Picture 1: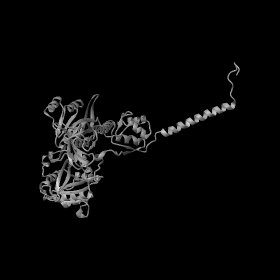
Picture 2 (picture 1 turned 45 degrees about the vertical axis):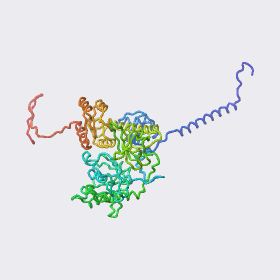
Picture 3 (picture 1 turned 180 degrees about the vertical axis):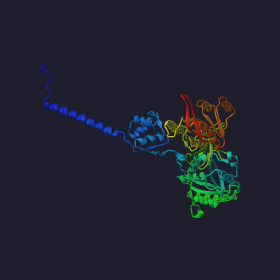
Picture 4 (picture 1 turned 30 degrees about the horizontal axis):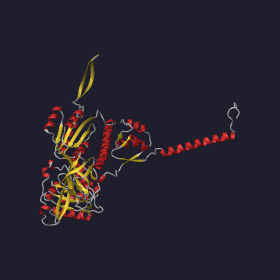
Length: 573
């Protein structure tokens, strides 16, 4: 084109085509953005599953398709301060979800393991016949341990504090085909039976449930002179929920005041109809003191076990459940477990809940050292790095690194659960209540016990105490001896130190006295609970009462200014 005339103008049709093309491109990009936004947009869930560990604020907001700020604001209105990454417990999640019209259900963890899921190994591919595992349940002082004493020809009950079983005792006995135990069996054919003696005291509900969940047959002990009691009813519920075959042993029939027929009537009211009445529940009359009927009871147990056709594969890595665990000063962590499948050997790398290690020593219930433990065998092994919790799954791994990874994963989950529980405690402190009058007092507690199962039972029982104006806050709850670190924690938080079946050493006692710290120690659970109850009661504010002692009617007032006298007539008092 010639110089100085500017750019040549495009024809009108060409310009229109360019404009339309650009508009179409913009429209297409807008549609693509909208489609992407629809695909990535958060969808509100009508129902969400929440485990005991709860959820973080961010996770809850995503489930409900709202912003985290809305969740934080709702929590603030409920009296709880939280940030986006903070975990909130299940109760708080349900409270917030209800505000947004979302239903909350309990999450079912598919990887809880044999012990926590309650799965019992009955039949396994490539398995061999194994001894039955029998749990003995019932009310306190109805003779559970005395029955096992007679079968084992040992004395256990006489050495227990208050005559109350306070831990799961696991024993394996060899019983002859004629029902006699190994000491009197002679040359008769031997059959092994593993017994679990569960506590009968009200505080040990978790132990009874655990005992029922990992067994094949449940023996329910009922005293003929006492009948069905609260823990008997609870044991029946555990047996039904576990789906195991119950065998009722009516004990103490040798007593003059025994009423076995009345016991049968009470059992039938709880849907345990005796066989002699046309039901399916074997009921055997026994006396753990004289041995009457014990042989018939053992025959019945073996018959029920034969019907179940129990088997397990001994040629695989062992799995099992922790029954009890405690710390021994000379040997380290001692974990009592029931091998449910596979074979546990010395040198195996194992994980047990949040603990891991290599098996150094295996000891059976009679104190004999073993090189390996077959299925249905109760043993105690040493080698873990920390004390596991009763009920944790024990699993053998190819390498110690894999065992460490599994233990770390479980420990992290337990840590999150504890944080959620702490959040729940803070929420209960800040949320207003209709009947709250005055400041809520908090009693900090450091709990130590001889075993993890005992610690669990004591803590559960203490948490069940009324905590309207005085709440319990557990700073620590673990198995082991009282240490200087416990005193330091109590001194820093003005806390109370509790010891169950553990006593402070002279040095610890002297240090506690010097710092003015209080240590409550007992070997009987209900005594320790009573002492804590008294301590909580002492923190309650004094209550004022007005008592009317008299009444008078004012007839006249004399005087003036600030000096006045009332003249009246006493009407009452």
